[in-house]
Length: 254
Image (cartoon, rainbow, N blue to C red):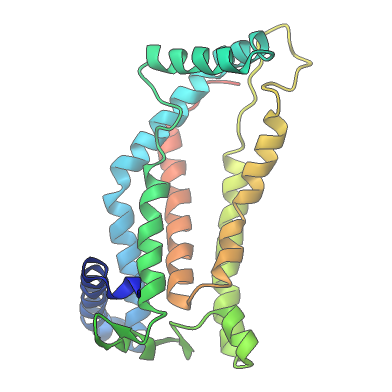
């Protein structure tokens, strides 16, 4: 069974297709042949604007976790040999503080279906039974439905392909590095434990979190150009938003 032919999914894709086509038409006087690419940028900005309240919730959650970090460290130190007790005490601490260790995950979760829709729109020749005109759109002579890896495998990669994808990946990598440097996880340890590295495994977690910042750049090599463009805009928006909100909701001193 083709899941994209399932009526609710087909209707969702058709609505997203109609929105992008309308945006492309509205932007054509300004963007010319890049109107469809510009419509993806506008869609990304609209989605991220709708998620600003969730971004604020995420910033508040980071602030709460920072404030609770020394107490969490104490719990980890006290109950490290009893994982079940540690989990109970940790959840009790969050409950007492009316907080959640999972608070602020909405922006990440909400992005996944949007990326999936953009990916699908520029992957299939037909949407809801009609021809997909978006596949005829280009950005600097590179089809919005082409991926870098796909063009390399097919032997159709051009200088424009390398330049466009190279520029997008460069933006994502630079943003990832700035994000990694600006938002390194704080290490908290109680006074008197200055020689401790903080929470057990904290250094490894911090390194993993830094490495994960760059997975988006790798992902952008495999998805259609339109989806890669969406990723570049959204990571840039995320960085700027986090910098602004970090000033509004600063973390507790380490």
